[in-house]
Image 1: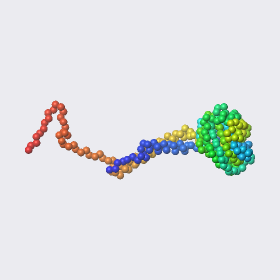
Image 2 (image 1 turned 135 degrees about the horizontal axis):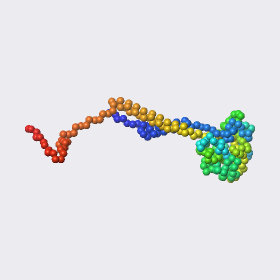
Image 3 (image 1 turned 90 degrees about the vertical axis):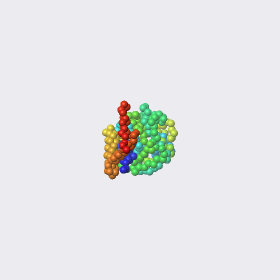
Image 4 (image 1 turned 180 degrees about the vertical axis):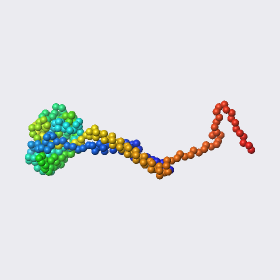
Length: 300
């Protein structure tokens, strides 16, 4: 009769792997993509100013630029104690902006948590002093961007930059610093910006990709950050719930499969009968010590 053999899918390892899959699927469903606009007050309201730096620099007869912009950590309060930023977006100015499509040949973007003494209104004129220890290059190479220049009262955030590498940002650890190095110029359109916002945004810029120092002011690009929200504790409980559901499902399926195979083979396999021991002298029970051995002779 055929013996029941466990499919590797239903071994302990299989149970663990598939149960984790159930849990992760539940957790993933709890995570959502969300956006934060800085300044928060300008999510749907034009900034009232415009800025061509650091992307639209060719019209200013510039071929290079190094640019820092610092964002107040208070603008990221909904991030809690941190999450992954996976991209950002800008929008055209409502003043002189226009639709465009462009590829900027040499762009590098870096994000970091600014050192404790650095923030809006307190940027150092020395670039190196503004960069945090956790700096990450989130994009490097030719940057293709465009805008349809639509939307009202503010234009849509359709000048999108998706990061090659995400950056984990915890607003409780400090302000957020964006560094842009434009190594080969480019022509886009003026971007929406705010001026005189020293408590929220500040910038440092210089007309050289390798500049050591530059000029500081309180103008900044209105920026939309894309991040992945961290699930709340109640959502994280879905991981455990999914794992338990996966285990129960697989155990029921395993039991059903075994039952079906046993039915097809005529029920559980009975134990084979034990052959009688040979009636030899060695097989006879031996008397205990002190007893007389008596044997009967066979009659002829």
